[in-house]
Image 1 (tube, rainbow, N blue to C red):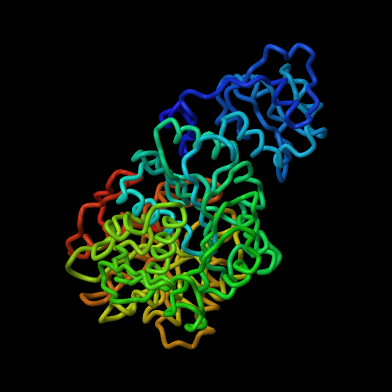
Image 2 (image 1 turned 180 degrees about the vertical axis):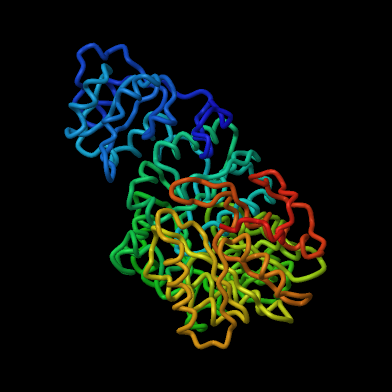
Length: 552
């Protein structure tokens, strides 16, 4: 089955291999020491495994785990009706699952065993014949490093795969992502499909949550990389120490073979000291808190322009290459340098990398990462996925360095996510801009007025001199920003990035900040280039400035 198979209408599809192995249910139970509650299961086989009944295909096993509010075993009957051949659950779910009329395998902790089970079902374990796996973790830069790494490998002639917050790629096919890192069952199925399609290397974004929630269990990364650590995700972790601890398992010998560690944030030194596999380090002195930090590789900024950042990557032994990352920002040069060293650690030769990159540009598309959506006339408009104070600070500074006029900053914050960073988000936004516009992002089930109030409070604490404005909804915010900007000015819209929806009370409402920015520019009379991204809704011929538009 391929990406064309059905999935819930508001979610991207789950991918499956087209020729999955056929596995014995009884053997599966034996491998994990599970209790098979059916004496007639000897002839039962399965071709897949999943956590979600909505994604289940006939012939697969349904893994029922305890959720926040309900136990997945309550959906065992629905799974059986959809064609599930068995339910894998814990003792608490076994009674409910038994009533579905299909075999039940009882294990102690099915979520913790999901990676192991999925690797066996799809033949994607550490000892199987797989593409190279190159994983990146850290607070910021994971997506950019992954896309840059894929672009670099493509320039070497490698058939690539990608799994990032923004997209999944399989030998040139592009699919929108659901989660930063897929669930283990989905990831192993994706990897099996990539193998079928001849993919040779896969760039993978690995979140802290993926490590904590067993989403990358059963995988062995050929190279693991660390970008940085800054304030984020304290809704999931008690403090920054616990957040860092959640990322460290990627650097154990049972998870990775080699590592590349960026020392631009103080946490990098901790990761390097505790890394259990052969590793090397990299630093960008223009970013690092201590510009004299010793590292195996250095990234030196050569030039910053609106269409890219030139940098030189130099090794301790004197080897160097100079290339251009196709977006603005010293942090993007740091991401690109990390990606190059990851490719080297994966076994691609320095000579091949120099031949492909030295004196040229990295050929990579970074969806929603400081993405320039405006044309050659009028204000420059960038759309970015950044959603942390550190990301705001670095990206605003990058925009400031290439902007002769005013910098306008438009942003909102996620609802039902880490609220402890909102004051700092507002403060950082006001400190880095001339005009700071607070709007909405994904309110989810929170009151959007309360979210904006926290951001505004942080902005006013900055005492930066920036003009602070508030507009809701974001359609109006970008319109007002464009009205306030002129030639030589820049607008940075952080938060939505590549996403094609807003989450409003659990409903994914079609929405594209990139397209809305283009329409606002066009409405103001500025020429705009054709989009290079899919638009999630038909073009609205109603001008954004129509006074009859119902903003609410």
